[in-house]
Every structure is written in C-alpha cells, then in structure tokens.
Image 1 (cartoon, rainbow, N blue to C red):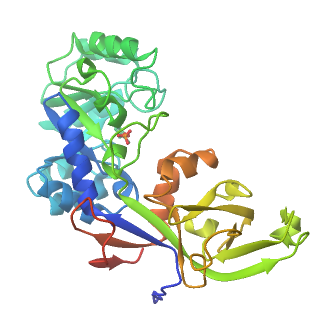
Image 2: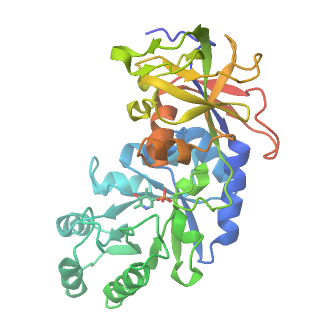
Length: 375
Ligand SMILES: *Cc1c(COP(=O)(O)O)cnc(C)c1O
C-alpha cells in the first residue's frame, strides 16, 4: 500500500523536548530508588523508538513493556536497560527471555512454576491487591511463601493500584498496608506500587521502584489536573471549508444540529476514523489559537463541523488548522467531555494519525518538524 502524504490530514505533533522535561519533573518528585518508564502499547501510541531514545538520553535505564515482541524492540534501542514485560511469559519461552535479558512479570502460580522449571531466571511477580485482573490473589501469595522459588531471582514484587486517579484517596493507606503485609514473608526484592499519580502524592508510599507512563506523556491522571506536566502531543486538523448558514439550517445527519441563528461553520478534516470520539456530538470544542469553536452536529468518519461565528475572520479559513488538543486545550479536558480517560483519546489519535516529532527547547512553541512518520 502506498501512503499518500497529504497536508490536509489530521496530524499529531510530538514534542520530545517536553517528554524529556516531564521525565526530569517526575525524577525530581520521586523519592524511591528506581524510576522506570512504562512504554507499553507503543509508548501509549506516541511511538516506541523516539520515546525510548529520548528517555534513554535522559538517563532512563528501566522500561516496562507490554509483551515479548515489544520488549525485544526496546532491547535493540536500549541494549543496557533493564526491561520488564508486563504480559509475563506469554508469547515466548523462558529461554527466549533469558537470551534477551528480559524480565517477565509473572502473573499466576502456573506461570511461576513454568519459569522455575526452566532453570535460573530473573523475574518480577505481580500481586493482585484489588483490581481483580492479572496478578496473584492473596491466597496464592500466602502459598508462595511456602513454595519453592528455587532458581528464580525475584527482582521485584509489584502491584497495580486499584485507583490510579486518587493516590491519596481513602483506600491508599489500606492498599499500601496490604501490599507490604503480603510481601513481608516473601524473599526480599524491590517493592513497586507507584504509578504516575503516586509520584506526586505521599512520598512515604513511593517504595523502591516506580512505573511511570502517563505523566511522561504529559497526561495528568488526577481529577484536579494539578500536576506540573507539559503537554507532549498536539492534535490538529485542517479547515476544509467555511460556510455561512442561515437560521434553521441543519448540520450533520438527521438534523443532529439545527442553527438557532445565522452561523458561520467550518468543516474540519477529522472524524472518528482519526480517533475523535463519536460522543463529542454537539459537545466540546476545538481551538483556533485561544478561541474556542464548539463542535456542532455529529462526528462523521472523516469530517467534523465547528461553530466559528464571531471568531476573527482570518483565523478559521480554508487551509488553517484547528487544534483538537494541545497547549490551548488539554487532551484530558476534551477526553472528559466524551467521558473518556485522556489516554484513550491520545493513544488512539496518535496510533492512527500521521505523527511528526520535534526535538527542541521545551519552552518554545512547537517548531518545524525534524522527522515525520506514517502509521
Ligand atoms: C500502564 C501501567 C502503569 C503506568 O500507569 P500510569 O498511570 O500511566 O503511570 C504502571 N504499571 C502497570 C502494571 C501498568 O499496566
């Protein structure tokens, strides 16, 4: 298939300078011993290669990946790094993990047996403290204390907090206490509980090792949006057409919107096929500079209409670009209008839209592109 490079497509600009700044901010806040970057799912859609290269240049030496194949890609980019594989032994033999020096996060008793029976292997072991997802249930953890882990070098005990948006919420002390109680009888290894939001919360809960994803990508997972992070990604889309519509005119299928008064409406070349949530029908807005242009009508596959009545006439013109999220509108806020976590909107848009990478001083606005990538 030939990729058609067209200036009239939605575009995600990724500022690697800001990724580096966010890494330094997180590193400045984290009081534990080891800080690792979560780069699962192609670095939350932003692109594994540029993200790992940038973070490694900042001194990051620990990565958390989704599966064996992704970990192998990180191994090539960061030959000396310590690489954890959240999906455990799925998809490859224990010997393959050993050969590539990858550390599987074991999530179940039978997986632990399989690892142990294969001979000496460095592993991490996940404990379920309330997500009901992957990881050993408390009964299995208590069994483990008595079982043989012979030959396994446990590098870390990890648990995923059941509430990632409220690291100081009512359950946080309880989670911390339960996790420490579970690991107390187990062989000593690094304890890892902290994720993005935890790094900015109570230092006494930081423990030995943090696994940070969202914060590095500029996504604030707390409801207050108070974290001192820089947006890393900006999504914009071209204005294809501007029309003056009379009162009563319909916009979108089946009269999804009807103009209550004469309106100037811009049609943007972006839709749900580019990750814009369908739930934004008649909800939320895009930005032209600091000006908001509300979404009117539905989100089509490749088109979306916005109300530009009253905006300075030279802003919303064919060929101009509307910011969907970025510096003027945070991805968290637009995602919230659609009832979504920011990572869903950011990850989907970044996965399907053309990406451009920028590397420059972090306090400057986005500069002309240094490189481009097509998904
Ligand atoms: C995704 C993930 C993280 C990172 O969470 P953020 O809130 O994005 O920092 C940490 N640990 C595990 C096990 C994860 O799956």
